[in-house]
Image (cartoon, rainbow, N blue to C red):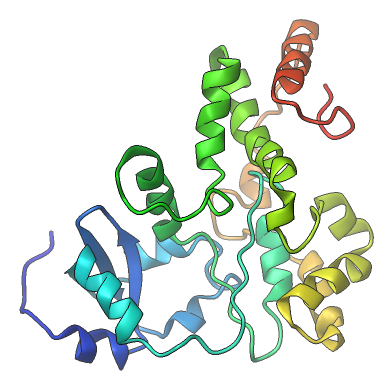
Length: 262
């Protein structure tokens, strides 16, 4: 239960206290939580899923009307220092691993899976909230894919969730700074793969040796997706009919059989 405490000036509350962090956005409000430590302490190595920590570690909650938030963000905050890079990915593709590899040195802060983007994507689909660009939210294409291929049952729906972002990437790859980075390449030849990623991010290649040490630990340790937890999940055995249906779905989604073949 949250109880109202007081009204505060946004400038004093948010601009000068790094422990206040944007939690999420709705059509009406922007929500912030007060954390016990600055957001840099909640990088991907310490918080593989930042939205969990923003809830469990919250000391206070503040909200601001969305119009006031947009005005505040545009006119009251100083320009961002350094470079901002967005990583997009398919589910269960090694995204936590690569973001932990990028979290190197003293100048990089990598934040994993902020809820803000999830809500923006949902509003982008379902409301008149300002459009922010299809390249950022593959969810719209995912919905269109569902309407197009009409998956039957959980297995086919899961395939759409997994494959649609990649299909979207292939059709819009000119928006991206890099071609796809695969988990297989990241594990088998990490130095070469990270070299291109570090170039885009503006990170010194001298830090690649530090980045590669991430392969020696479970990137999602302590979460429900840790290696120990996932080892307890029974693998799904696909029948011949399942494989046939999935391969037909791959063709409908215009996915390359070299990547998706069952």
